[in-house]
Image 1 (cartoon, chains in turn red, purple):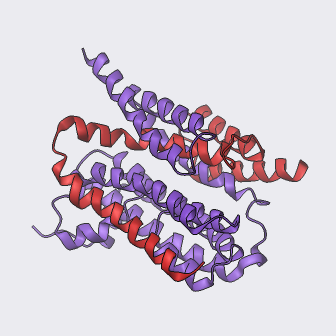
Image 2 (cartoon, rainbow over the protein chains, first blue to last red):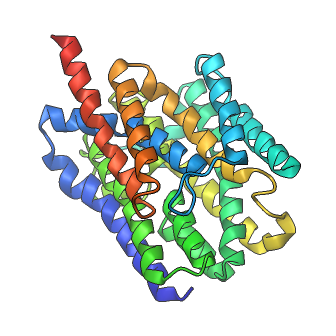
Length: 103
Length: 233
């Protein structure tokens, strides 16, 4: 990879952050817009989970990652959200590695 | 009244939040290491991997860009999917603006670099006000330091660490997001937004280029808010 695309990506990524925080954010004084923005993590985090667990090259792939995530979700749901971060992450990685090694 | 320096905020956080910030940082260092390994095996030099983590600093976009490069895809599609993914940080910026909006411009421009999934998720799980601002800065500093140290170690070690996928590290990333999502699922509107966002992303995986399914999932906030309004009546 050459430097120019990398620096372009850096400029674009930082520019998007500034657009939200410094340019658009202070103008969004409408209560409804702010409530929508506050709900964003709720909508985007599960989407990131789905795409990183089941996403393939333009197709849905159920592989070892799904087993690891099933364990993570079970730990979190079973403990009503009290399972420690490290336990959930390590368990998901370990189960995924084991299923992958077995398959 | 002058604002405290970001680094002092860590000292006045409640213990559970402080612990969560450290634990998250440690986990992020592992993600950073797997990024460093992936980046160098995809053909980036060590300085390039390090500069990307310092300047781009949004994990999902970095993984997306490097994966496309590794798969031999065009630079255009690498940048396209990475920037599409990065667009959600603009939306997170809108969510964080009420918390950080009164700071001097220089501090807001510095804080902007830290507006990513982890900081927004951790901060907005706290009530609005000083605690939310402190949580943002503490999480931001922790994630920034650990992500970049991890990247450097992973890039230097390269293949010596082994295949990140053989260790299941590709599942550790989404598993971490499951935990981060928990505080946002306590209320019904969050649950509806989460279900809608996940469904939109799932449906779009086979239909849209990488990055778009996640951006489109932001639409999940609409049914979430509609549901909340119906409950209030």
